[in-house]
Amino acid sequence: MKILIIGGNGTIGKKVSAYFRGKYEVIIGGRSNSDVSIDISKSESIEAGLNKIGKLDAIICIAGEAKWDKFENLTEEDYYIGLKSKLMGQVNLVRIGRNYLNKKGSITLSTGILADDPVEKTTSAAMVNGAIHSFVKAVDLEMENEIRVNAVSLGVVEDAYEKYKDYFPGHNPVNMNKVVNAYIRSVEGKGSGEIIRQYE
Amino acid sequence: MKILIIGGNGTIGKKVSAYFRGKYEVIIGGRSNSDVSIDISKSESIEAGLNKIGKLDAIICIAGEAKWDKFENLTEEDYYIGLKSKLMGQVNLVRIGRNYLNKKGSITLSTGILADDPVEKTTSAAMVNGAIHSFVKAVDLEMENEIRVNAVSLGVVEDAYEKYKDYFPGHNPVNMNKVVNAYIRSVEGKGSGEIIRQYE
Image (cartoon, rainbow over all chains, first blue to last red):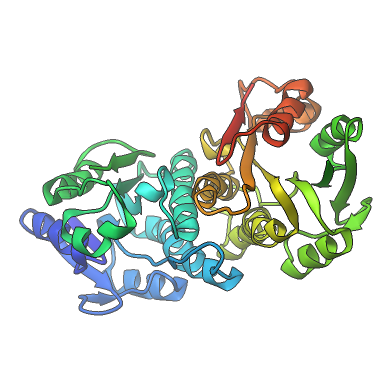
């Protein structure tokens, strides 16, 4: 199996990549420190990166930005950071990426607990995550070639807990083994159109 | 109580307006056939319309577009129709509208069953609806002045059933009294941050 992991060198991505590298051929995509340069916020960059790689069996995206700030501070333009990057970046990855997948291939997107259980300053991030949850259910009805699309929705992960804990009062950090397992479930399982929630 | 109903002359809007007009002062907003011209896809239009009206006790939005088509046909630009209109139009209505509401005022947005239970050709519409569901939960944590924000999420409504039934195989039309009641629950009830689902 040949897997592209976009954001495969990030906090979550490096743990996920370490697992898959032990079993399969892994290519790391991203804006920096990557095997192939891919910026998901630009369709041309997705297309160019995938063109270089050729056919794949799985694509995992653990990338995408959204601006965090108080609702009263967020401008209309601020919302478009998340819409262009984490939302449309992942939608475009499905639109374009499906053409580079072998039969029965899979695409795994990343969202998070804010879709279901937001905290302060996350009106933008929450809406982007919620959008992807509904998108995944909808696109699953139309995928061809037996291609599966799922989203992994995580709580605050252990390796980022110190940095983010003040934003998430009372939240329990998600153990990194559980984090990796959520991605394994998507790629190696047979489920499709699923939101794989791992919130603690 | 003084209520602005954007889209108050549409299929759903006219039934909702008829109820509220019997009890309160109702102003119809919209792109045409309205008391005050408001195009939610443009922030300046929202601001200008609200400026003309002055202080309000409730805003109901039953407006917003998204493009319906097969996933393989939808372009990146097509998704931005929904993002700019039904999604950011309603987000901007909360951003701007809260400043025109009296204490304990309310804002009611409109979404739909596709967020939870999409059908073919609705990857764009589903994601916009899902985005608003999460946005409503998130913004509810930050509203001041005791302002409430809810979303009404409907199935295929009775008055549009003939037009849409082929898109929704096996769905049960929502009786128009139930439709109106969902908006009454949001405006006259005390709930906040709620997704008021009425799917059949």
